[in-house]
Every structure is written in structure tokens, then in C-alpha cells.
Length: 503
Image (tube, rainbow, N blue to C red; front, side, top):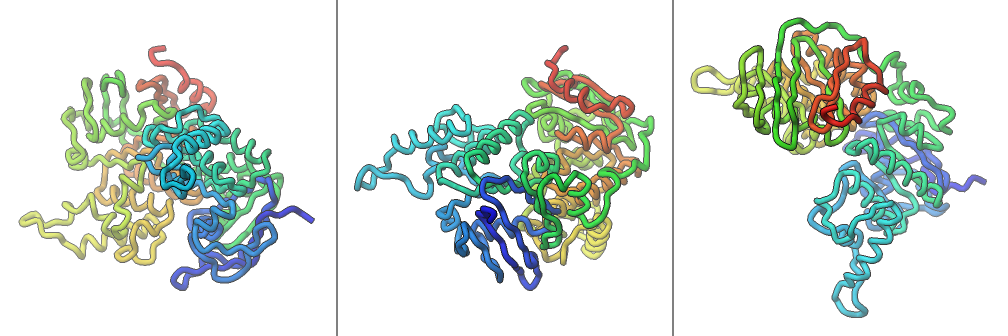
């Protein structure tokens, strides 16, 4: 008999009459890494929330170590040895690492109410060592890098003696080096007998790590088996329910020779140095760089979110050096931030309210500034439809209720309603499933085809090669190289990114 640590039998779950899980059957072996994949809205999060005690299931049976298991809250799940490492980490930034480890129950001095600080410090140090993190347990979380925070979450799971650890999109904020470090630790956890459920939209990582793969689509298990039964294309077709001959849409336009944006010798102390490049109408210009390369900081300066010390920014040949976001918007520039949840959307506002934010002045009367609500509402409906945003009612449903891919479409739609001539997108497909990625690439392609200029920032070389006309490579705040489409080569681009500035 196979040694299954976790078994889902006929699990069903509905929210407000809508079935989100339909007769789910999964068996997970002890000490294995299981890759759980599916498009946004496929039911992955709901299934894991059931396992983690966040929501109950409606019907079916869940067995943990052969015993019926139905946690009523996350505390019961934690006591049963279930740890959930979320994409948006659940750490208290103002507390120390050690305090985060014991937040649910601090050890006391004997029978006194006093916290045994020495004991929690020593225990935290021991678990940090298990994930190769050589930092003080007294350090506050806010001082840690994203990679260090991820490893602190893993160490916290070990401190709770977790036997099943769920990783939800763990590499979205990590550098390549931090990702490799995390993968090594996952392999060690597996060797130590821990069971790992690994959720990711980066399919090559799932193929690398997983022993078995489970594919969810529309709340149902549509394919499961050992990883030898999968390749990237079979994973994609199983997830989306159709064959995608290519991950990237065919380009329907080419750059013109008309300049949209010109940057000359742009510098800001400690951030960027002597940045010079041109962006043409109809062009998709990629910017690649490792974490800390200055790529996002450059976008902030171009849009007016940050200042620069020297150099020039020209929009359609006109100097625009005293920039603010308001002036950038007036000059038909748009900026899709890499952090859609905190910077790109009002999560508790409706989809319609988010969509109309930037373009409101366009729908006001010239005299008196009275909002033409019916015209705005019609434009919002048309944008929701053209972007294929999956929402029941854009004027009632909040942004926080949408999947990651649909949230990103709302962010894009917010800017598209203002008809931008220059669009800056920073990591536009982060945390988005493969089907939604294709749709976002298609939207960006259509924007360029209409004559807009696009600056496309990404840490994924493959997607830049797939959608861009040229690629700039940044490192240590400088442009280290430039590649035309005919010169695109993954290894050469990556080698360029590792060069030191000025060489």
C-alpha cells in the first residue's frame, strides 16, 4: 500500500451558489514534492485554504495520515503540522524574527508570566541555521530582503514542526540566486521526510522540483501523474483546456522611426548612472536586469515618481525634466507598477471605480467639470469586454475578489481608458497564469500596433524575447548592453546582466 500522508476524496466547495471545487480527488505521498498548477480561478487557493483551516469544505472526505481531518481554523491546521507559506508573506514587519516564530505562544520563565527571551532566541537561531540563514534572530523583519523573509517563513514552519509545507508562488520576489537557494532547501526538506505542495505559474520550476503534478481546471482535477508524464506543452494545454501553439502572440506591428521618448545621460546618485536610450512609436522595448539593477527605479524616475540629479527626458522631442505623475498622465504616459495589490489597485473599490480613476477628466464637461456618468459607464463596459475581464458585475464586484490575471487586466484597463501614447509596464505578468499571460501579451501587442510606445520591464528573459523588438540590459544602475531582435540570445543576455558597470 502506498504511504499517503494526505488524501482528498470527492471534495466539493461552493461560494454563494457558485461551485469552485467539484469532486476533487487527490492523493499525496509522504516525503514527495507535489506540483499544483492551474489558471487563476482554477481552485488552487480554495483547496489549500481548506487544508489550512481557512474555509470548510461542503462535502467529501479529507484524510491526514489515514485519519479524518476537518480543521475548523488555521490554529488547528498548524497543530496538525500544516504550514502555509503565502506569496504575500505573513510576517509582522515590526517584530523580530524570534518574536515572529513564537507569536502564537511565547515560552515563559517557569510559572511566571515573563517571556523567556533567551530560550526563544536560541530556538530561533537553531531553525535559522537549518535554512542556512546566518542572521541575528533579534533583527526585525522589515530589515530583511525578500529572499531572507521567504527563508524566515520556512524556518518558522520548521519551528512549528510542520510535516506538510505549502509554497504558494514562492519565487515571485526572489533573485535568481535566492531562488536557487530556496530550491536547495526544498530538496533538503524532502530528504528529511517533509511533504511539499508547490504552487507556481513558473512551469519549468514545477517540472524541476515536483515528483508528481496535479492540474486543476475550473475546480476539477483534469490531469495528475508523475512528472515524467508531463512537459511544458502538456501542462499548458491541461491548464487552459486547449492547445497553445505558442506562448506569445505574433507581432502585428513594427517600430516606426518616430521618437516617442528619449532619455539622455540620466543619473541619480546611488540609483541610476548615465542612462541613455530611445523609444520609438509602435515599439516594445524590453528592459532586463537582476534584482537591484535599477530597472524599477528608472521607471519611477521616467514617470515622475522620483527625481533625477542630471540628464534629460524628452517626450516627442520636448524636454520634460520637472516631472510629476500628474504631468506624465497629462502627457499621455501610463505606468503599470510591479505591485498591483498595493500600488496599482484600490482593492476594496469596485472594478468600475478602479477602471475610471485615471481617465475621469476625459469624461467631465469642459465647463464646470461635471462628470458624464453614462459616457464613463459605457466606456468602462467596453474596456471590460475588450480586455475579457472575468467579473460578474464591474459596478458591484470589488477588485480584491478577482484572480491575479483579471486584477492585472483591470490595472491595464485603467490606463488604456486614458489612451496613452507611452506605456511603461513593470513585471506585468508576475503571479499570473499562462492563459492570462497570453492575453496580457496580446493587449500590449495591440497597444503597440496602434502606435503607442511600450517600455516592458521584466526579470523573465523568455517573455522579453517573446514580445519585444529590442532589449536593454541593466545592472548596477547602468545600461550594460543592447540587443536587437536578430541578436536575441538567452545566455548572452544573462551574461551581460552579470557584468560590472563601466566594463
